[in-house]
Each structure stands twice: as structure tokens, then as C-alpha cells.
Image 1 (cartoon, rainbow, N blue to C red):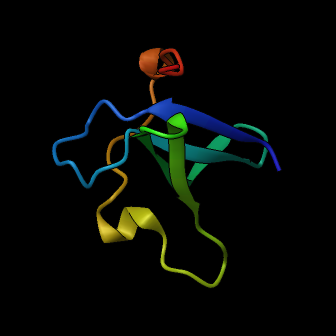
Image 2: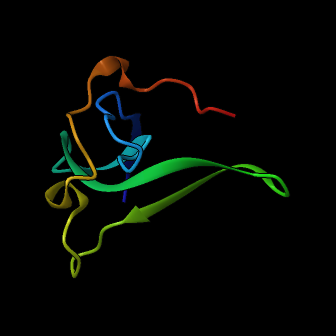
Length: 80
């Protein structure tokens, strides 16, 4: 499986993810499959937490966590 991660420029709520995860489908099409949130731990430092939807779960985009569509400039740098 090939994935791509884009910065979520449409984040309007702290519960919305910082990044969205897409899977390449049929060569060029992208399908939202998950989300990542940036976190910081005093003990471990910076980290990502996230979810990947599988066939048996309701996709994040239907629950309202993932918003917007990727654009060419959505990439951004990984924050650490």
C-alpha cells in the first residue's frame, strides 16, 4: 500500500487532525484513510498519534475528523 500524508490546512477545531493520511487508489486517485495529531511528551519529546481506517470501521471523513482535499502545497515539513 502506498500512502501520502498532507498537512490539514482546514483544521478549525483542536479535535481535527494536524495531518491527513491518503492511500493511492487506481494509480492516481487518493482516498482518505486516516489522521495524525502532533503531540509532545515531557519524557519522550515530540511524537505523532494517529489512526488508520480499515475496511471494518467508519472512515474518519464521515465522522468529521478529516476535512478538505489535498493540494500541491499541502505537504509542509514534518514539525520535528
